[in-house]
Image 1 (tube, rainbow, N blue to C red):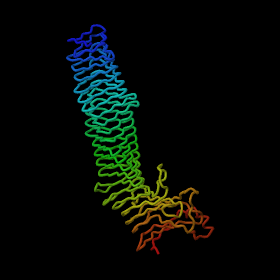
Image 2 (cartoon, rainbow, N blue to C red):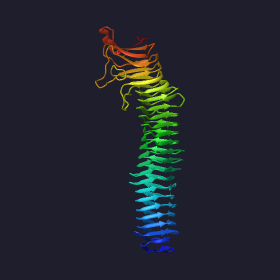
Image 3 (spheres, rainbow, N blue to C red):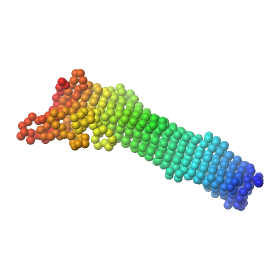
Image 4 (cartoon, rainbow, N blue to C red):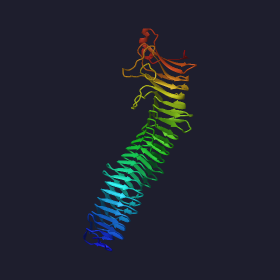
Length: 535
């Protein structure tokens, strides 16, 4: 049997065990309406709740329903809003069943909604949150539906909750994703004016995430972008944990991005920085990913360019306080059209290109890769092979190649290590395809390849620098200590048909034994310089 009244007014506890069709209801303070299992209550017109509504069956709202005052709605069944539903004042909705805001429904929350089961915003429905929604279970925004979190509003996704967005979420309030909760965005998530999105768990973006206007996005957990991520206007992204930009995803930074954790640009992804990218953690450009810097890229910690990844710099790149390591077949490419300076610690086991212009190093440069420039200027320290004291994996000794000319200034230092007689594998070589203009300092240290510290013998020679032509000489020599009775010779050798060479060789000291005992400690450091033609 169905019951139908123009208005159901409850001044006591009423248990509805039969369906009621198309009626408005009014539940007063202290009153209770129970909708039993297998029972459907369809409300139309204007309904209000100042008491308690317990739903174990189904409540379909096709009118205007307001839960107000200290009202309470306990839903363990199904609550469908097809029209207008307001939760206001101190009213609370406890959803332990299924809450559907659907069709063209408008659900406005000015108080508290606690979802512990299933909350669906469907079709063309609109959910506006001005206060607090706590989701500890399943929240779905599908179809053409919209979730609008207004200024002062808060959506907490917590516990083991999963929030799935296949439509549109507009946030001008606060979204908290905490505990082990997950946000899956396959639609559009807009973090708008003064909005804050704080992810302390897992946020997966396979759709479009727009951090815009004056909003902030803080990642304290795992943020995986496989879609499109736009950081625009004066918005701020702050990564304090793990941020993956992968699977051919696109991240465009037109504002400010701070990395304090681990940021990986990978799997064919593209990261374009048009304004300010500050790295104070670990920044990795890997696989076949592309990082384009059209603004200001500041590396204060560790930056890894790996595999076949490309770092293209068209504007300002500051590595003065950081460590940059290039490995595999990766590339650092300058396209500024101006002479550039690369500071800090640079470990190049791949390739750096500054075609048509000069590139000055005034920090520490090491590695076994290639540098292409009109002229490479050493105003700091160059260590062919792996930089000693830098805790990165890599080859200890090797050949650092320069395609272009090379100038070492008065304040520059070339530091080589010798662990045997084979060039490039047992001692360091700086190989220059163009003209080398030498000055500054040269230091040579012996190296332990595993069988003990190497010690050169008379007759040993080491071609530590090769170039098409060599002009000038090193101003200061600091050479490894030899055994008694031996000395270093340094020769600047030129070849009309091939490369010129800087050769270090070891010879016996042609002095009487009595005099040698007096002067041996000094002579081991003396470099005898001469220039002659290679025969």
